[in-house]
Image (tube, rainbow, N blue to C red; front, top):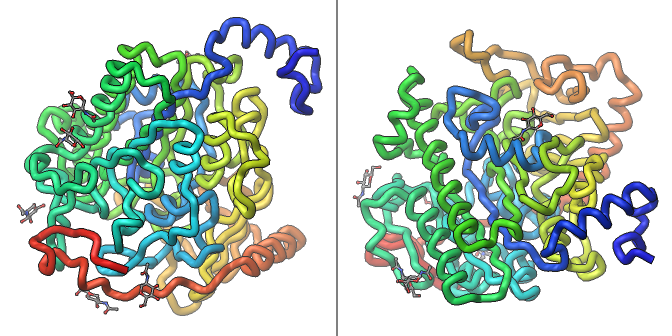
Length: 495
Ligand SMILES: *[C@@H]1O[C@H](CO)[C@@H](O)[C@H](O)[C@H]1NC(C)=O
Ligand SMILES: *[C@@H]1O[C@H](CO)[C@@H](O)[C@H](O)[C@H]1NC(C)=O
Ligand SMILES: *[C@@H]1O[C@H](CO)[C@@H](O)[C@H](O)[C@H]1NC(C)=O
Ligand SMILES: *[C@@H]1O[C@H](CO)[C@@H](O)[C@H](O)[C@H]1NC(C)=O
Ligand SMILES: *[C@@H]1O[C@H](CO)[C@@H](O)[C@H](O)[C@H]1NC(C)=O
Ligand SMILES: *[C@@H]1O[C@H](CO)[C@@H](O)[C@H](O)[C@H]1NC(C)=O
């Protein structure tokens, strides 16, 4: 009996043979992989080279080409909600969080409750050496809520994000410094570009790990504050984007080029440490792009903070030199949701499915990904907002969008414009819209009047999703955290 073939997924003899061959060439098959998890903030569909050649991301393009592309990867409509989904494996609306008009920051006392054991904590408990280089975004009302207490062995970066990329100060009403090395305010970061600092730190972690001959697998969450505004980038990256006329888009392109360069340097460090054969890379954006700061989601509809595809379907891929075997250089068919990363990463870290927490919305896709099959997901909730009555769900190729204030509110559903046009095309919204994403990924043709049965079924699905919503957590202004009350620094304030 071949051990790898006891599972039902090994039903086909040819697949078993492939597994044997695969194990034979993969010396490290029994080990937990090192994981480099890269998140870029607010990178829209067309803010990466593979979807928009005017953007210069040659290294990421190549990794994606050699890895498994995730062309139907979905985030939440906004970054904080996506981070909740990623770290808990749950749809934010099922635990009291809004994705749109959530306004957690900068003034509220939002802090992700301690009752949730987070993805990095599971990995740490499995023997991983876990590190966050970048933005935390999950609240800091007291020391207990800081990344170091939620599963990260080390933390380097910002608690809040949305900072000036050089002086690391929040821009707006309550301006304050926010750059940390563990629990110490790190003033040495001042004047240095955030994307470069976060990448350098990850390089450092990898090489020190290797120098110390630390046998533990690494999990590095490299969570860039780019491409968030303010739009800033070093001149040598702007030069790469000089062909772009629009000045916001040019700098956005440069910020993405800096991400490309940073990831390249980190992966070179893995290579230098001879870890490359054991490395899994995860790359995704935190939400669709905000069109008012040079982002483009074309040809997808709408933008960040909407449940249309342009707000939620984001650039993503996986890469590994060894783990995907025959499935490398392919595209994963069917939807993957950001919550899926929770069980999928733990499965990649060889954790038994029975040890996952109850009530996850994330679907384990690992076996499907590594065997070249299609997504285990037929069904997805984009979001449900019980205070506005808006949201979206999908089942197979069909998607229902609910927009309750269609009669009185400005329709959020304009279609991002193709490069040849200079302004968005307006379209009308309805209370219920139905799209066939297989044939109409841009959501241009509402089928709610013609596919009545489909619409009824999707409405049922929406109601079932809505039934799981819990009332929104109430936030108050956490004035005690404000920089003006803390020597100009955002910091824990007691809760
Ligand atoms: C991926 O495969 C295609 C053929 O299906 C090939 O043209 C392409 O060069 C490959 N890409 C990489 C990066 O190997
Ligand atoms: C934020 O403040 C509200 C109102 O006082 C409170 O109900 C909530 O628990 C607070 N949140 C945290 C994380 O302290
Ligand atoms: C940081 O840079 C912003 C511009 O993005 C500026 O408005 C602010 O005054 C600067 N803050 C400090 C402390 O230098
Ligand atoms: C960060 O702190 C560690 C010790 O916790 C120290 O070794 C390192 O030099 C510090 N790095 C910076 C950039 O301050
Ligand atoms: C890596 O090691 C160097 C030299 O010992 C040290 O200065 C640096 O702080 C270490 N960095 C990290 C992230 O541990
Ligand atoms: C929170 O504080 C900000 C900045 O002072 C202010 O604009 C906002 O209205 C306050 N919100 C509440 C609910 O008090």
